Image (tube, rainbow, N blue to C red; front, side, top):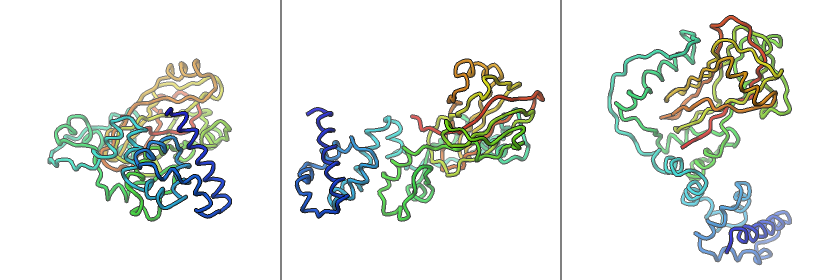
Length: 333
């Protein structure tokens, strides 16, 4: 039996259920499509791999048996393992909840490594903590691993695209994890603290091709500083940092080094430095179209506040020509 055949049959089944649900008929009246309940749970589970999340939610509301099937940890463990790379699936269904061995160490204080520094800035203080306690040597000495208890996951997890259930203790843990994995962890530049945001130096502009509706447009400034934080706590894991930007004039002047910084409260931070020539190369490739730049990775060991920044002020030359849409954290193996 081919995948296409199964998919076709199940779409027909879902169509029948949708019509029945709209017409609010009784269970007896849709008994003609309930043959599917005679299949073994393992086969049902494989068939539902073809369904979107929206379809699954609709399916779970059709009858008690399907609700029980879909609201079970084993169902969501299967779905996680079928959709995500093995390291991610293994981490979020098992490894993440294994408590590490606690080893007391004295970590030598280290500087943040930033070229553009505010001595008592929130992101700078957090960066010094990250450089001190989450450098490779410190992690190895105390045998640190990514960890959160199941109780802390339930109390800390929040979503960017979805609404967290009010009675989350009644929702299978692995279902909450699945939705965390597919959630887009994104923050718009306009929701950050932008120095000199006055429509002369930097402007909040509407852009129909933006993913967020509004963008930050750098018109002309010698002191560039944009800082912010992700609205929700970020769970342990390894994340790729992606900035979406473009040139709004087919040209950019970004003298000196521009630092793109991401710092978790309990994890290894990222500093990526771009020079004027890097921006020019991006513009040659993409013209005035939006493009996404992968800046590097962060590693989070415990549920964390995550701060970000864009800084360039050591070079007093005027900077112009770049617009920023949003930053995103993408889970990677």
